Length: 195
Image 1 (cartoon, rainbow, N blue to C red):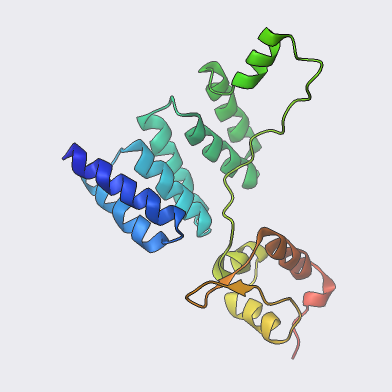
Image 2: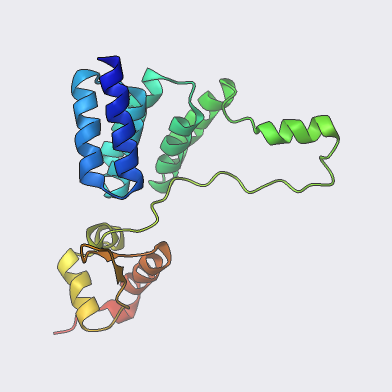
């Protein structure tokens, strides 16, 4: 049974990295049917839910992953960054304090720099960024912009916003920069509906 779960997990991770999210979801779901508290499967399902804009689902998966194995820094990082994105700062601070008490927020390179006496000669590196997918779907961009998917498609047809690249299936792949530009457009006066 354990070998089967490990194989399924490896297949799911490979599918997720390749952008085959449906296939990855199927593998993770199968794992969670047999082991509902499997920490890696829960965390990675949370990442997939986040990618698809299902933030409530993502939070539930991240919470289960942390409860199942609270010693993995990435679980905390994903969860705290999602709380910050949702502007749940009190909860994010609370979770950070818990992670800090467990020693999970310690930067190993900072400790090494101190031991080597290099604290003043090297600048601190940037903080860990949240997991952010490389590309976003039309539905996710529309949801984040607070408009209906059909509205976003109409803006594309009217050339009000630039057409993104497409994947091999013909699906639109919005970069983060394109998505942010659409958010600004949606907030601006130019986004007023055209009759």
